[in-house]
Image 1 (cartoon, rainbow, N blue to C red):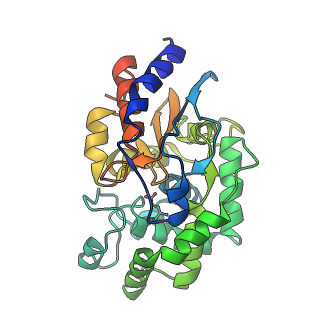
Image 2 (image 1 turned 90 degrees about the vertical axis):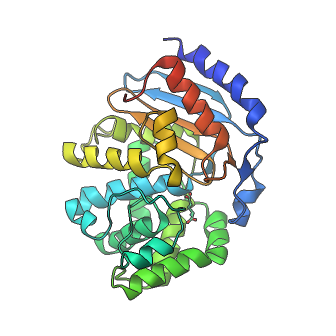
Image 3 (image 1 turned 60 degrees about the horizontal axis):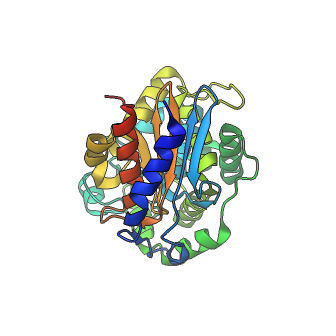
Length: 304
Ligand code: GLU
């Protein structure tokens, strides 16, 4: 397969669409990003890699960090993680409060904000220095020791995170948050603020493509069953209320973030990161989704 040519053709085809999406502006720091950016990085588990566009430029991974947080929680705490967070698609926006009230403070899944905030609460109890442990984990699985949180992005979100504050407080009222709400929010914003480029992201998520075994250090972080479950949640809940559309058009487990990044994996084969900051009305990268759709259509590489 000539991945080099395929990625080049994808870039050519999607670039005219880059003014169609809208850069997230509810976190002021994200609104400053140039919407014409586009990068893509494919890392095959056989060690080969291919890239186009702005793949070396770092961006805010935002909700993509929720998968790494879940991996850390499950690998440390095991299946009891799922006692405080469900695994059903929400069909609601990522920051919705409505469902949470009906369902008595138990989030629908770990990839909506409510779920990731509960996972953050668990990580506070499970690690002495959870922020450092998260960075250590992300650096170890990606093989990039310079991965960092972005304090300006975290602070920007902290100042405007009224919905997230409401979500944590609501869950606290139902007894599903054990720590101080501000501590949970601060750490959650740090996790979301991590900057990575397409290469670093693709290499980090080889952890999932490789059934929970790090490709850099060969460490087995997730059991087969834990790998299966996390991949299934990516497939069903990784794209806000557009997971069905993503499965339909792309056919890969993945996760997107409001920074315009999307990671998609094919178990045993590859990890593929794409970044384009303009979002569609559901909050997923408009060009990123299109690029992945073309990729799986042209290569016939999907899980189906
Ligand atoms: N930090 C963002 C928030 O909590 C993450 C949103 C996302 O990427 O889905 O709103």
